[in-house]
Image (cartoon, rainbow, N blue to C red; front, side, top):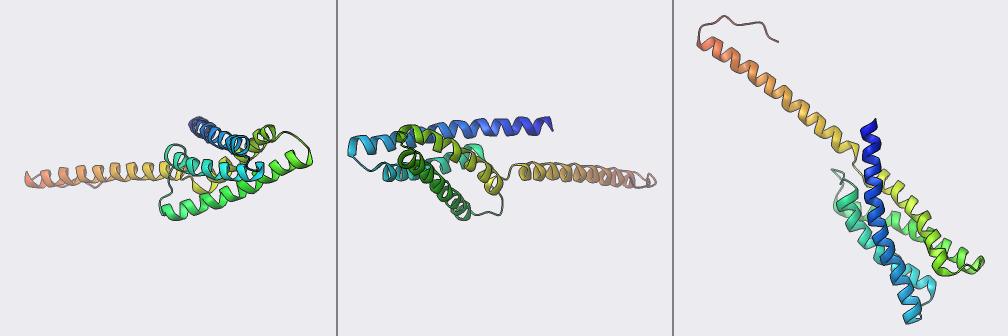
Length: 173
């Protein structure tokens, strides 16, 4: 139980590092597009979100989450995109609500929107994309099978050796 909590904390920390980098990409590109190129804040927030999601997919599936066996990379990416599109809708709704309805500066609104979407991303990616414990259980089963095979092989070798030397056979273990 304690090791499960430790692993979850490590995973959340890795997710946090990837998330901070993705946020810098998202936030930086949004401000650059809006301030330097005059792109509407909602369009620039959408473009920057898409760019950061692409980075986030590559980094998350390499460093944070464990690939589920039986789930093709194409399907994995499709699930990631669907979850991200829902995250984008949440992001844009927060941006609109904060900036247009509540008249909060778009840069400040983006920070709040990012926190909300970050929770959405971790929970849904963990649920739908992370093999997590499945991999550990498979490894444990494999180790157990190897141990049993070694034991059976050792017993068979002992019997064969005994028979070769004329020793009466022992009862099976």
